[in-house]
Length: 116
Length: 159
Image (cartoon, rainbow over all chains, first blue to last red; front, side, top):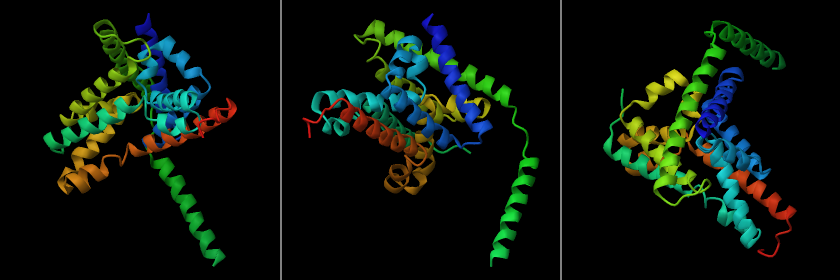
């Protein structure tokens, strides 16, 4: 069942993205920025976590999860060490995503040549 | 002077209208369906990877997202390197842009593209050219929300 909801929720988020790009003629960069900010706001309101419980990877794979994890790290650290924790905690959860994207992309640039 | 600016704006207006008329109609419903199917499919792959990590290692439902995202990024970078991801992208649009794999694709594609300008100025300097806005806006939004949260919950002792 989790697979079904992962498919539906993940697919819906992507369809909304397509709607923003085609309907409102936003560039992909604007769409992604809007999604990250929405994910951050939804996590701040405590909604995104429930969506993850409900849809699993359908909520954690779209880029909205990036915004949500940023907020999550910031709020968790804010609980532990107060206001300064907002700064120290922001990248705590997203570290794996950002560092792996940087490392793999750099290795790819070493190995692959541009196509076409 | 005022006359000439109004004339220019008329021309821009006219140009916009003509450009709008000439632009091929985007099949909105079909594009959304494609984005839905491809995006859903990528999330199902993510769910499979997640299940695998949960069964093999000691991850719970919340911590498992990190290695899953890293794995998907690895796959996306590999597909980008082989030139496959861009072909998927042309077909599905939002379905490949919105998942985290699209983020990885944006980073690795620019990294590969700019390697001819050298590793420091080219790869290092341009890697975040497309993906940077995601990190910047995400971080700023998270900061604002974090500050609001900290104030609301009266977490002042860390200052």
